[in-house]
Length: 159
Image 1 (cartoon, rainbow, N blue to C red):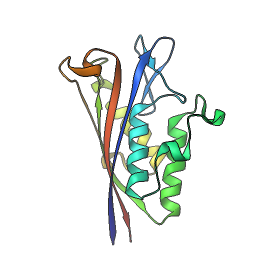
Image 2: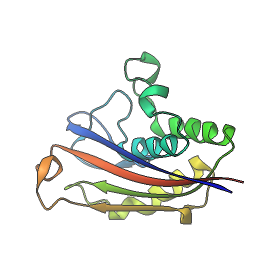
Image 3: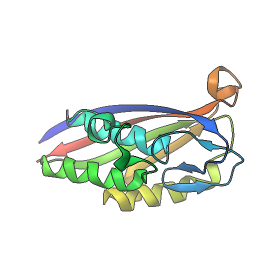
């Protein structure tokens, strides 16, 4: 059995007149995240983690932000494409461990729905996905409410 580990990181700044989408879930909040796609920082970190584990580049390689085809793209749909690529290379997603760093809004009420949405997209059980949310105690850009970031570690396996 071949085991591969990947790490992903992403960050997006807050913007007015944008929806806040995290883990494929619409979060009610006054601000959304700015990006070429839907700016789902959590899904972007997960995709980079999976692509890194399989040594297949990063999301910018597969879904460039200067390509109009990805303007406003649904990141969960892109995640499905990444998982298909992982599968085409003989790997299976074993588990995901992700952390969202956001001073606001509070994300705890949405984590279960995020896990279910992501599990469905990745064709794995929700109990294989860990999502944690934390603040930076009002420090740094997230603490100053300038944006949100996310880290992810993933494990993929090949029999």
